[in-house]
Length: 239
Image 1 (tube, rainbow, N blue to C red):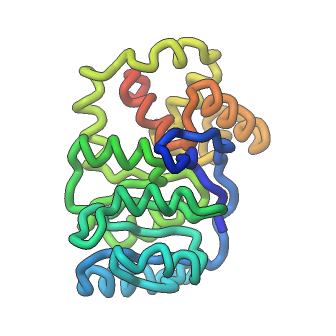
Image 2 (cartoon, one colour; image 1 turned 180 degrees about the horizontal axis):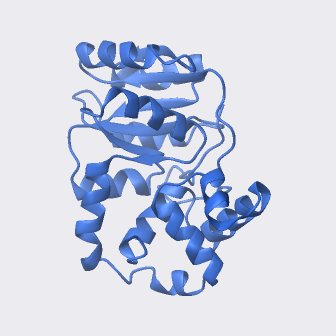
């Protein structure tokens, strides 16, 4: 099962330190659990992902059964609806992230508001996808989440760009402390590039890129690439 990609939280809500997650090769097959309150959505997503040869949907469930299903099936990725009547997705995200060796979680929703995006990212979501995501893009996104690289749908990225000017500067000091090469790596993270793609752009080996990514995440005080990408957007590093 994939290692945690975001800080766990103690029972009183305080954030505890967690190791930085740097992408590795995706497991094969990628075990996925789909959580949604609508049976039609669950079956549709399972059918779409089931056509991918390297993805196995091991279970689908409603919100109230999520923790038990995750602990029983031990998936690599959970696709989690953000709005459900029995328990909201953000609450479940927090609980899943607190599980030892828990899976990566991508929020799946029809809503792309700043409120949900910010909360999901802060709680350690490994992705944020809209329910109308194209089937092939959905499979690619699951693969990215399974490696720890994370994913953000195009509408979410647009939302970040639109909201960036009024939030720029909040983490300016941390970004200013990066070296020129580290800022370049951060920019590539903001574009959603994998370590291999970053290495090709910068003419660096995989081990060197991994070291740079770890250094960037550590200096920025973030736990995963999604959070780093948000900072890159808000700092104006993304063209």
